[in-house]
Length: 189
Image 1 (cartoon, rainbow, N blue to C red):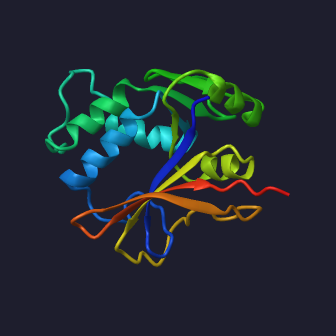
Image 2: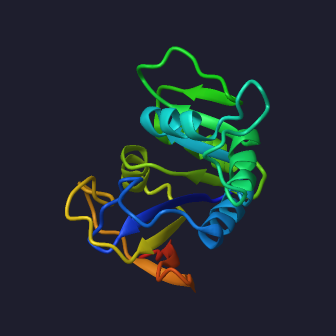
């Protein structure tokens, strides 16, 4: 069974807007590239899919845009070639090596997790909340940015039940950001 990993940048006050943290540097881009490469497939909601596609899809020319630095190209290549699943009840179709997921989210994700492989990666805000509420996330990866945003969407806001986590890995970056990997603890009755 392949694990479902939720990974996201988050500020010290819990904001997970993609522009709230530090600008990416070489070290963080290497980290996120490695995270992408640990996954057999990426899982996105409609909004995150659109945002990622607009930023990281290889242009038709085959040439990455001028704004993209050398350290961002391996990440772009990893996400561009990855298999993607897009959860949406409003989209009628997707491309960019993607498959549309509609209907019973829990059933579909349980099936995807049963397939052999290294793992599934989910990012974003809304979809991970639904997956956490269903108890489907096997690993949480938070890269905590040394920033107080003061506003914006917050991490797993509206979670129905508390999820106890166990720290399994920690890595400090030169920027002051800290990547922390957690797994839910299984409570036995």
